Image 1 (cartoon, rainbow, N blue to C red):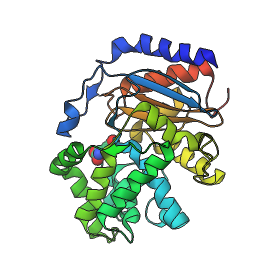
Image 2: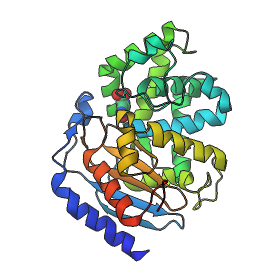
Image 3: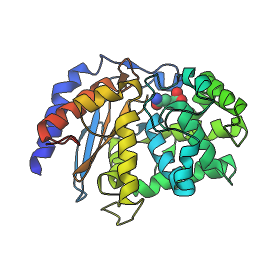
Image 4: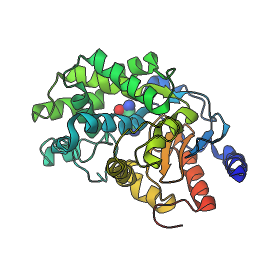
Length: 309
Ligand SMILES: NC(=O)CC[C@H](N)C(=O)O
């Protein structure tokens, strides 16, 4: 579809002036230094054709988008027993909230809030040293994107480890309920490194393509997960992928998506394409402000929506 390229350019042109509106995450010092005017878009359709524009090939910190990949990995290792440790309900709270954990005996609401992702990191650690688990995550993402150059930004990982007091609180709190099987510092080591994966929009869209294609990457031919599992991961992204902004994202965009505080969003149009956007300024829920608007424009113009055309 040649006009998809024209469309991504139109979206970029229309929204570029608004990139200053959001607020760059500054609670992780190395993220605070990112240029707020960066803006990239990449779409990959099921034939592997790429439509992209702007800063689409510049690597950024994917942060919580990584939670989709670690969930996929954990489900592959532990299957449905994963859900004994983490729920599947929207939290209605901020991504780093601790409040529900006390009422709900240390079991996080879903795998996409920080507490839930920390539990998932613990389950990815099973049988591994932290270094091995981190290596496994990186190799898995390289395999998904079919790109061996993808790597972790060690400075971002260090920066987060030095300042991640809220995540340390979440992990220690869950440990006190017996919900983590490994030492807290090992689990957080894995978690901080997965969040520090650096990827471009193009790489991210490629990595998410299996979710748009019933679990099989149409470019490599690799079956990553079953079609049922792909549907279920998409369902979780739709209901929980944007924290307390998930309802709003479903209303305006209507596609499963996962955001990160680095300003990236990976979205999935099942049967059609995988999309990644990056604009570092965030809205009040910690989701990319311009990235969300870009996806809304894309969904409106293409008619892509899981709720009907
Ligand atoms: N929403 C996010 O992207 C949060 C991830 C970030 N690494 C944190 O733990 O705070």
